Image 1 (spheres, protein in one colour):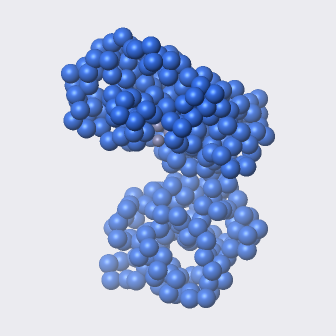
Image 2: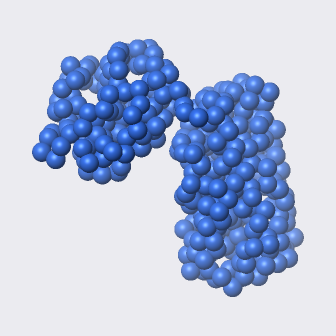
Length: 362
Ligand code: ZN
Ligand code: ZN
Ligand code: ZN
């Protein structure tokens, strides 16, 4: 069941050695659970995992949070309310010349560490951890697959169980959140419901707009399953769609297909973006596809690698990411179709299986 945390720490130490990094300090954010299984609380009390070039890593936690830490292959040291955690943690570090710091460490702690080592140079830990976390092992892929299937089951239930017309976006969003948990997620993290003209805003915050007949409604939701995210989008039609709505949906669907067809080991991330974007551009809607084609997914909903122009990262077996082309017509409507896929040695591995056709709902 467990992950190989010591193996992950060893791989981090190898990439630290490659980059001449003496010390990595991880606090809140997904790197810490990736290497320890422990997720730090977002508080003013410092939690920091200290990984030195060699030797056992040490997790410093506030005394009152120590009961949350499951014993692992690392030393745990607690600090009390009158201790100075920065000087305790830096006390085991010597005087490092290059320090990697978790991307989400609060600046209040970072600045304190920087005062301890005024001559050190600094980099964000994702320069080391991004490449490790990008390649999922079989167990991680299975958790992503279970999460994706949980969302697929919600998508399948929507036409029968979710009434849209006459309800607000917020009400529908709440129902999607409940269903995401019912279908096995530990927690539902988000449920974008963007109706009619709001669909033209890709990250619309569900609000008080009452959904009407003739709307397209973009539903983009997901949660966490054993720590790993789902994230999927379907666009629904309230009653009969117009010819234009059907056409735009068909184009986005073809773009989603083109993205999936492009997935293979060795293909560059930018080529996947281009494959999907070309379909939308050739249909004349290029200026209305206003975001990248996809993002990596794992312990974070958005992580490396990004399917975006300019990213020359080759796709490798073990990578998992979204494909989510969309067309957004300001003041009118939007369409997005989003699936999570993985790349295996054989090529495309479709984690989401839900149908992609335009579904009519009431
Ligand atoms: Zn998004
Ligand atoms: Zn999404
Ligand atoms: Zn996404």
